[in-house]
Image (cartoon, rainbow, N blue to C red; front, side, top):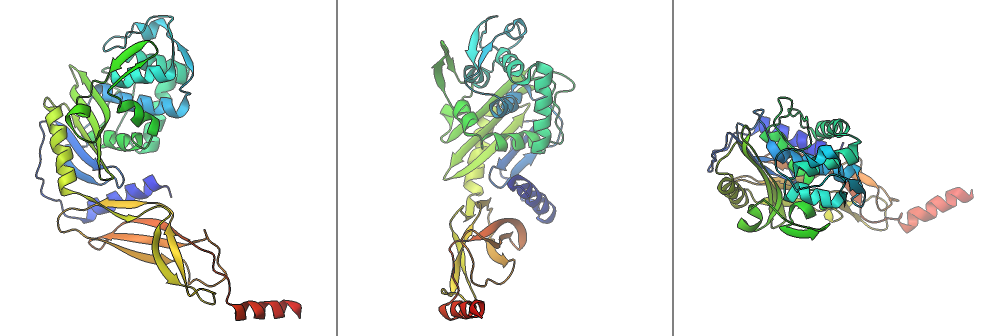
Length: 361
């Protein structure tokens, strides 16, 4: 089971079993959500499952698909269709040649609708082919209430998402180092152009790492942002919000102040020592095969227990899968991480001699 699926199941379980916490923050948005990236836990929501127009926040998915499926050094020749795309632009000229990386900066910093079409034609072979890749990726991420009809977010009845789905997308996007590098850039000169980021939160809020603004007359102002503090990353989404800069600052500050993350396991680090029967050592170290953290509200506690697949008996090799660490929030399971034996434990000398004698008979 993948880490993302485990996280999703844990979030669903906790949503069903835990009481709703009174909120101490609000927004001017029609739809909004605040989500912890590593756990997927929702810290605030407001009409989060309403299907809405999302404008240029679409370009987060466009960038993610392009980075996954394309090559940043590929040279793209701008088509007439791309050059004459309506709306926000990085001002591409027909026949101009730029790298895919330059186009991605134009997509994310300038919100270039022309860049989106050029990228789609390069990576997908056509806009239609790329849109199929977008919808496939959305389904793989679990964006069950979303549909994409173009790579730039221009209004279309078949182009919509929800605040919750966009938060899921953002959580996946910030795991991609290339996308974060581009989305968090305030200004850059590349491919003969100097481009500045439309995302004011990069300068308004400490720890902001992007992601994307959006606006059409029908969609209103849309914004997806991510910020990081003390190793914790939070994603905020507002749709149809005339006060989005202030609302995102309030949401993110609320999350960091009221839902600090507790790191219960770190990849490759010791979780516990357990007994080993018949070994030269009496115990063996168990190390985490993944990391696990969880945001905790007031009065919440996270407990860790170890469940072994079987009692450990020497010999046992380092790296052997031996069990799972189970994390419980106020008694309810929040997640699991596989445990590996952190060291090789050989049989005790007497045991080893017995084995050798048996073999010699």
